[in-house]
Length: 200
Ligand SMILES: [Zn+2]
Picture 1 (cartoon, rainbow, N blue to C red):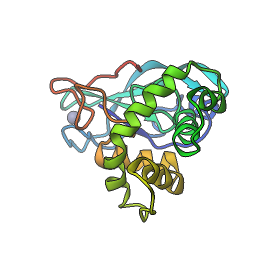
Picture 2 (cartoon, protein in one colour; picture 1 turned 180 degrees about the horizontal axis):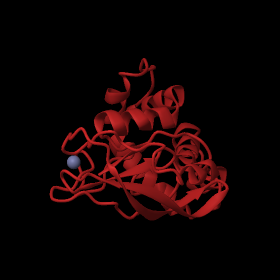
Picture 3 (cartoon, rainbow, N blue to C red; picture 1 turned 90 degrees about the horizontal axis):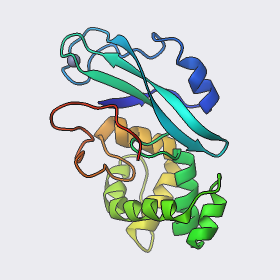
Picture 4 (cartoon, rainbow, N blue to C red; picture 1 turned 90 degrees about the vertical axis):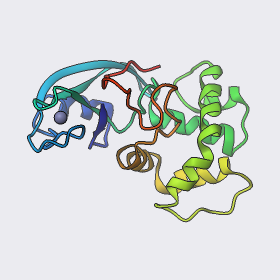
């Protein structure tokens, strides 16, 4: 399964921190609840597109000796199964859904250049998820008056901060900001085995 790497900073700082397996080693297993610290178990790689970065990052993996399952520590600036960083996705969604820019305009607002169809896919998923987000995020902030759930969810995300909201959703309630891909709902876990997962 994936849990969050408790770290906020640049991609570069994240990469430097990864060298030390003790820095954020989980002290217990989140899957079988055994109380032993997990064993470092290498890395997997995934792609990342951020404003100033387009490449591969490593994600540290740990193994639980008790249940023999792995846990990977996903940095907070990415969403599981999505290639673009949370910041890029947030910029696009705000431009398109909050400010009413065209798809092409919103794609130009959220660097780096990308096909607008990618943003269209985020919009579709965000719309489907907006009402649930409003309900869950009400634990963190007062819902503001808004014409619909999409606007309300965006206002709440802006007020909480997207990364803080993602941290709460993912670590607290196993909710994916844009909804889990089919087959991983409701909590992002496959039924049989946990998986590192390739970003879509
Ligand atoms: Zn375990």
